[in-house]
Length: 314
Image 1 (cartoon, rainbow, N blue to C red):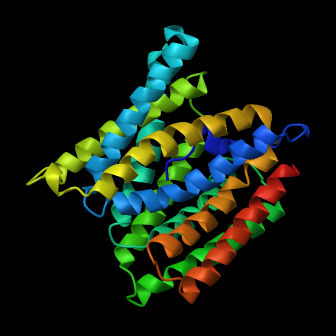
Image 2: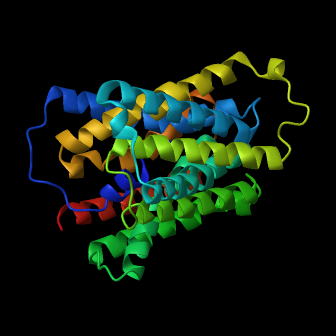
């Protein structure tokens, strides 16, 4: 889960702009978001084969954040990175919720559960956001609530592998908590004074969240007996892929899409990414596609589709 900033995650649950012509570059950028973000779960699973969970996540996001900040300064000037203390604190808070709480826990969970299952459990995020919006007095609509019910029904089915002992229930519950924290971070970003430049905001979020991951990794003792030589070549390649493609290229494509394409079209990543993740896990890592994962995943995706479809009409 390396995907949007909090501001952008919240955007999938707001009304879309007037229809625009969908060009070839839009479809190309959308394909990048579909495939690359869907593949990040596979990348994470390969990274944690030989690398410590939180330390690897920390290195990934600190590097990605610094690279993004450098690109922003190069393309837009250093003034684009200037923020107030309140904006910096807000970005740091959202970064901790998204990167440390959301992504960091997913990385930890993938040491014990399949990547495809993790992606499907995370897919319930829009349902959590709908409930958070309701708690703050908004009324997303009956269709959105129906989607929430479907999403949580699918979530219940997806937990069956853990209850039956096929996977570790602790890993399943860890991803559920990660999804909740990601939702809180996404929702909070629309309520607090975030940096106006979305690229700068993302850079600060990734750096803050990455530092949080490094600190948690050190507290957990992941540095004890650490041997860089024991890290496999494929774990290094997966980590580099997550930094460059998952956190930079796909993010840039997504940010461009937000300014260029209809939001209702961009939001489709929410139910395409889990499908891509499940297929890649099955094809590349031979992850078992059990009936709870197939049925629960289909129900979750249907729920997210209903939520997004309802929101695009409001």
